[in-house]
Structure formats: C-alpha cells, structure tokens
Image (cartoon, rainbow, N blue to C red; front, side, top):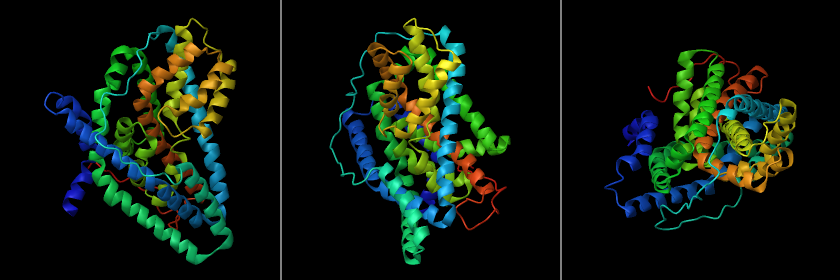
Length: 410
C-alpha cells in the first residue's frame, strides 16, 4: 500500500495530465453511464471535501497564529496589504497588455448559451455545509489571536493535534484519490463542450488571455525562485497538480488541498503553507485580474467604445482590487461582484455585461487554474518576506532560508 501511495505521489502531475485527456481518447467506446458514474463520484468526493474543508482551514490558521504569538496581528495586516498589492499589479498588467493588443481583436456578439447539461448525474450526495471557508478563516484568525492573549497551553495542544489530523487527511486520503476526483469533472467538461467552444469560437481572445496569464505567472515564479532556472522548474513542477485540479474542477476551494501539498514542498514550512493558502485562495486571484481586465477592454472595443486612458482606468482598477476581498467562492464569482463596477465606471450596458459574463464563464476553467497557481507563487514570496521579518510561524528560525524546494516529479 505504501509503495502504491509513493508511486502515486511521484507521478501525480503526469497522472493528472493523462486523466484530463481520457475523455478525448475514450469518447467513442466509454458509455454515457460510465461517464455519468465518474462524474457523480467526483461530485460526491467534492461534497465530502466541502464539508470537511472549513475544519481544515480553521485548524491550519489557528495553529499558525498560535505559533506566532504576539506577531499574529502584524502577519494578518501584512497579508492583506500584500494581497491587495499583488492583485492590483496584475490588474494593471492586464490593462497594459490589453490596451496594446485589444484594438486588433474583437469577439462574436452572438453567443449561444451554454446548456451545462451535457452530462447528468447518476446520484446526488450532498452534506450540509455547517460553515463556509470564509467563516472558518475568520474564526481561525480570531481564535489564534485569543489563544495568544490567554496563553492556554491545553487549548494550544488541541489545536495542534487538530492540525496534524487535517494534514493526515489531506496526505493519506484526499491526494491518493485525486485522479478519480479529477476524472469525473474531465468527462463533464468534455461533454459540455466548454473547452472546445472556448478554443473554436474565441481562439484569438483565449490565446491572448492565456499567454498573458502564463507569462505573468512564469515571471512571478522566476522571481520567487531568485532567478534560478532549476528552482523555477521545481516550483512549477510542484504546483502543476494544483493547476490541473483547478482547470478540471473550476473550483479554487476544491484545489486547495492539492495547492497546500504543493506549497509545503516549495517553501519547506508546512505551518505557513497551511495558513497562507486558505487565507488567499479566494481573494488573491491574479488569473482573473489579468483575464477579466483584458476581456473588459475587448468588450469595449467590440461595442465600438474607446479604451479608457490610464488615469480613468486607475479608478476602476483600485475598486476592482478592493472588490476581490468580497468575491463569492463560486464559478464565475468575480464577474458577479465586478459587474456593477463595470457598469458604473466603465459604462457597460446590460448587453455588454451579458456578453462578458458569458465569455468569462467559458474561460473560467483556465482562469481558475491560473488563480490557483498564482496563489502558489504568492505563498513563496510572502513566506520569504515573513521569514525576513521573523514571522515564519515555525520554531525553526532561519535555518530554511536558503533551502532548496522538494520536487514532486523527480
């Protein structure tokens, strides 16, 4: 059993790539019922994950803050500032690219609505969500602060034990079944034709968005790797399973356990990884920051409206970056929050908002994958900053300052 688990761990990125291609390779001989079975299984696993995830988030966050002591408040404030800075930088990067390239591109105004019914479920299994991840995150920060103020050692030990149990669940239960979790969603994406529609109908726009996001992401990781190509390759290889999970599930929350595992390897500090990732998974979204900004400019160009100058866009960019702190954790959640801002500050009509919403939903699998990967890069940079400030959340001091990341593919 340990051998199988070890092989699964080593070959996880390659295995997930194969899983994503299975629906295309087996389209003619895998029956509808088999596809429906795996999709239902994926939804069942997701329901279980969504149920336990708030407890995992709470235990990880409270444990990290409990270890930090009086530095916990500074850590929280620094995190908020860094997330805002990273988001707004990505937004203006999207504007810089879009203002140059968008005049060359337009999108079809006629859009066939996605039916989303290409594959039905065989059964429905849902557990009640007792707490949302955001509630668990806030509760974890509050509990961590209180533990430091009251200094109740038995309570600390309980939280530390809960964190160990959460870590065991992710490493020994969720990660080994990850390929089955991905397979059902891969069948669903293929049956709905989302990926093929994005490529065939909106190829030039999709290419511009993805190339922009990937270039930004690779630069982010290269800087995080301190311009070492070897370390850069290791970072990207470690985060690849999380990228593939985000692409197939279209859910940052469902990708969180995989990203935590990847980030632990990249920064070598499990405590920090288990705090930064849950805290930023829904509010630090550089993929959508770049993608939605470019789509907004493309929409303006399609409706023969001028692209705003830098000064006019700066106001929108500022409010967009603030709005990211309130984005709902649902597919396309960012467009629901940013839509009113587009109408009030960029002059979007209802028709324009409908168009950008539909196109954004088609592109959402790619955007989610970029968001998840971007959080992995942010965690490396932020953990290094915390280490310099003595906020590393571990008792190990500075011994890992020059540590090489652990590779998951070698």
